Image 1: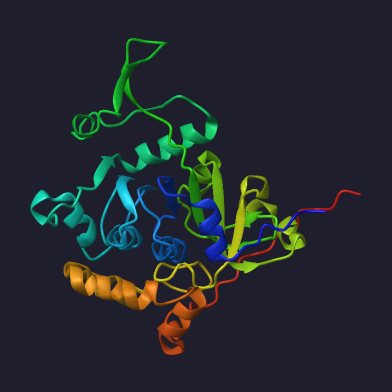
Image 2 (image 1 turned 45 degrees about the horizontal axis):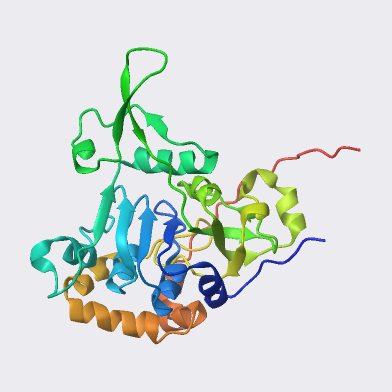
Length: 310
């Protein structure tokens, strides 16, 4: 009989995210783990190395919450709006508060980050890629290194593996054992999960194992690598979950003026993170009227017959 891995967000983060860890919260514009990030802030984790292919508003919030000493990333910004002001204040020397330590940064291309996770998942010492020849990233990041092909005189670049201590992903559904299914836009959740020592899966819905078995091709992460399953509806807000709720564009627009003023940002963290015990309370605070504007239309997928072996 399978063992249940279902846990509260509080307990999953308390047990599996430790000070000093490298933490990856992955999801490419879709399925971004805001509720997990907020719990990390709420528990005042410290000295984390945050890895993410597209650190957007959630990492701006986490860095404003003081959880991180380093950021490993590719593209960085508030999608469709502009920059990330909390991160900017931790990077630019003129913006640092007296005595504040600058945020360490380690930058790659999108493909470089995917390649790092893939190497980590496969247990490889590096991953070669035909990239970076017309950029200055190798000058900015000494971990992007030229290597000679063992089969020709060609020189390409290589990046080291990335093995997070903890990877956190959001998904539509999982069973109690952690078999996790996703549909819609994918990022590198699978690679980041397989590369990690510990994995937390946050889902909109917990389903029976029979539901997972009936549609196995949607399973991107098997339960055998999952340490905790957290059921947290609307846990990806303000990003979106295909079929459940749309992207809250208003939030991303509002975040820019909030994040430009450090005092206003810290008040936002008090109102929406520190003084809110969990995601259910956050959703209640957001309000039914706001949630109603995010309800998507219906677009059912076709069904297939997998066939039954007798």
